[in-house]
Length: 483
Image 1 (tube, one colour):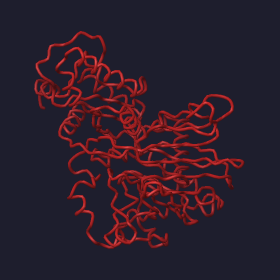
Image 2 (cartoon, one colour):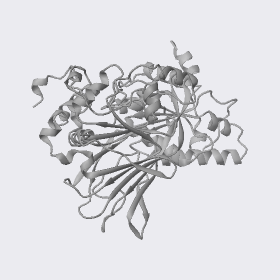
Image 3 (cartoon, one colour):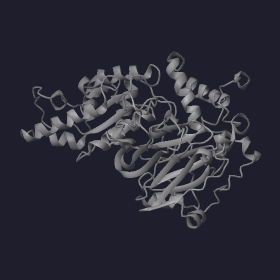
Image 4 (cartoon, one colour):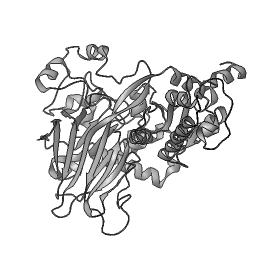
């Protein structure tokens, strides 16, 4: 790829002609289909100026009609239009249309919320040949790109960086990841719109949020989402503070390092390091929430929550908070005694982990460290009741919201259940593992003691370790300025 001519030949592998993308456009004469046709979706607001720069670069080297700004057009509208056009061309006898459809791959550039949005849309469309998705890390945490081998640092946006990424996409393997159904039951407002339900500002991944029935004012749902991770409690509160600050002062959030430093500062000021001193006992999840899980079809069980747990994380990936694995890898004894498994991305199970505070999170940097493993389940239900607080904080796929809690005898229910699977693109050395891969089984079961502190007896000895961005003060931050 050293010359323009060789670049041109290379890029032909990814090119999609306009008549495949734009209905009623004059057909082009093509002898065969490219090896790796791609659709590119970019959140131009992600990564400071990086998203906008990346948009310009991709449009300069590919057909501009195959590169989309998510700030201008939603992915469900784009994909529905393109796949309907594929069907029209196939019905009209176009022999290349089914080949483009079968070879198609998607690139999405943005944060975890943007990636989750695309995954949910592809899942909802129920395509006969859903395209696999590669992710460009333009966010702050970038857990999804990191889990599938695409890195966690914001990428270069110049021509050579984009050509290198396209080459990785061409060589990538396909992996399946579980998709999840998200249900929320709460009393809908008597006045105003239900989409979104005021005062909620819900994540992009909950893109289809609506009332179940106009006659049922208690039922509200989203049909589908692909859950990268969801958390409730103190960690989500810090994320919400960060999100709110970024909306008020977007000019201050221009690069990943500044974002992570600001996140660390908010973790201190929000009391995540000393919740027992700065927050009342109601900050304990168990004070205002009952959690139930389903490990076997039709069998709901109460999940015991230790009173000191202030944050619950539900994961479908071996990456959280910028690359750490809260679930860890249970050794063979834990797998046998507690019926636990490694965190496979396609086993239909969601990992449920608890944390007491940011200090508890420091165990993640210890050898074989992990949070308090609460359970693995096919479904989990949070039942919020009237208690000592009028709201809690939740986060889905990296995007937080402030969830009102009942003020009377009502119950707010949030339920996540396994739905199906969507396809990801992954590098060959990625950390995400499939339960169908024999090498994954052998590499996980090494029989070592994994420092299991399931009774949450994490003491001062762990405080010497560093931690993830949610828990750790980055080296670049002057701790004396965190006031």
